[in-house]
Length: 179
Image (cartoon, rainbow, N blue to C red; front, side, top):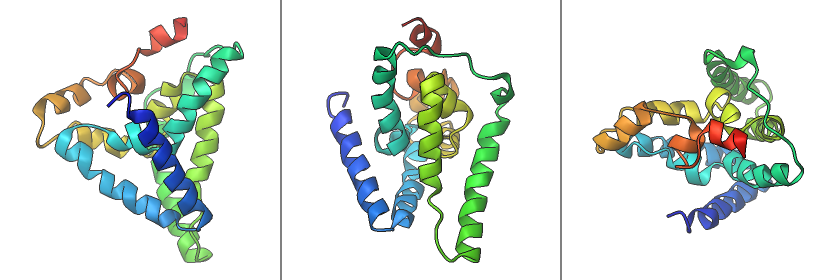
């Protein structure tokens, strides 16, 4: 899976771009909503791991950031407590509903979150965005904890230790900060 993951991510990113150019981001939203079944059934955040365009771009930006010598700053104190991730989810849903009603079009909120995720990745470890801001990971993580078919995966999701460690199976924040 680790060898196939970059290709899968690239294919999903291409699909996202095609849907964006065709003005059919509602198709991406539908795919995301269907992907919520995966963590509920198998306890794995496969959307976050393989399909999310933000994660794909962030994974490409991180090595570039290291080559430029940019260091990770500590997460700001105002992000502690988990309020921001709930606020970002509420904002995303509200913008979607309001834009549909008022202007009759879907506002491309995913593009806003992509810009935010890339900006934050330039300053902080990617886990800061994934764990404290991303509105799409919140439902994925919550459902993974309740895995119906894989109790071990559900236990791993409940023992969450940050996106990089728990979802991607990589190093934790402290190891990443040292590198």
